[in-house]
Image 1 (cartoon, protein in one colour):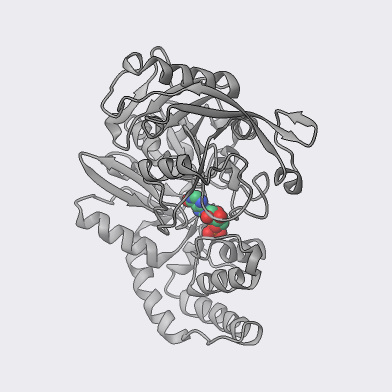
Image 2 (cartoon, rainbow, N blue to C red; image 1 turned 180 degrees about the vertical axis):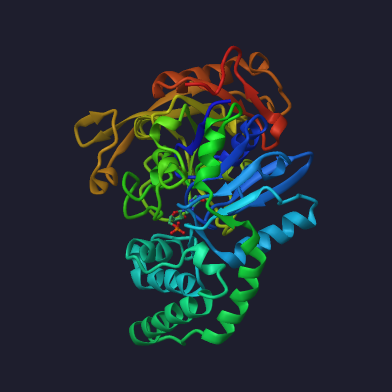
Length: 430
Ligand code: IMP
C-alpha cells in the first residue's frame, strides 16, 4: 500500500479514526502528524468502543507501528492515562513511538488556555481548554519543552522549574491568579517521564524507512481543514496544520513521499466551538442530526452544531489538501428526513459565488444556495453493499461527488468497522 494521508475535510469530527483504522490493516505504520489531546478519535471494533486522544488510531492492529510525530503537542498526563487504559483493555503498546521533537503540554498551558478564553469574553474561540494554543505559541516562540528533553532525567528538573517559574510570573502578575506548585508538578511529571521514556526516540528515520517499504504509511490528521491555523476560519481555528501538507512537517517524509490524500467528510456538517458556519441548522432538522448522529464532542462532551452538507467548503478543502478521493460518513444519520439539502454556492449580497471568501467578515454574511434532493426513510445501518442502498441515497452520494469534483471511494452507515462500504470499482487511490 502506498503512503496515504487521511485528512478531515470539514471542521473536524469527521470520523477519521475509523478510516485510519480501516486503512491501517494493510499498512506498516500509522503516523499522527498534528494537534494534541484536543482530538478525540473513536474506533469501534468487535462491539468495543475505543476513544483515543493522542495514540494513533492504528494501535488496535497488533503489527502496525504507531508514531506520534514532531508536529503533535503531547500532554504527558493524558498520554500516560490513555496508555494505561489501552493496556488495561488488552491492547499491547509495544509498537508505540513518540518523537523526541514533539512538544510537551504542561499544566500552565491548560491554565493559560482557559484564562485566555475567559479574557476573550464574547469573542471566545470555544477551545477545548487542553492547552493547545499556548503550547504551540511556546513552540513558535522557541521556549517550548520537547519530549526528548522531558524524558532526560538530567535535564528535566531544571527545564521544568525554569518554565514553571516563568509561567507563575505570568499567572500572578498578568492574570492575578494563584501560582502553580512548582515542586509538586516536578514530582508528578517525574512519574510521567518515567512511564513515557521507553517510547521516545528519533521517529523520522523510522517513518522514512516505512514510507519506502511495500506496505506504506497512513498519516493520520487530527481536527479538520477548516480549523487549520492558516486556511481555516481564523481566528476560530486550532493552532496547528490539520491539512494534508501538515503530514510533511517533521514526520520524516517530504511532499513527494505522499502518494494519496483521502478526505473524510460527514454527509452533513458539524462544528464545535465558535465561528462561522453558513449551513448551520438551529431547527428540528439540526436537532435530528445531533441526536441521531450522537453529535457530542468526544473530548469535551459539548453538543456539536449541525447543518447541511456544504459543497463550497468541500471544494475549498479539496483544493488545499489536493484530495484524490473522499470518504463520506454518517449517511445513516440523514435517513428519515424527507428531503435533504446540499449548499452548492453562496450568495453574498447580489453576488453568487461557488468559492469560499477568504475574508471572515464576508463569510459571516453569506447565504447558502441550496440544492434540494429527495431523502430516504429506510434504516440503512445494516446495509453492506453500495448497490443495496436506497436509490435516493445513492443519488445523494453521486450529487455530492459531482458538486465537490472528487471521487467518493467509500461511504459509512454506522460507527463500526464493518459499516464502511467501498463503492464498486473504487479504491482509496489517487
Ligand atoms: P483548541 O484546538 O482546543 O485550541 O480549539 C480551537 C477550536 O478548534 C475550537 O473551536 C475547538 O472546538 C476546535 N477543535 C479542536 N479540536 C477539535 C476536534 O478534534 N474536533 C473538532 N473541533 C476541534
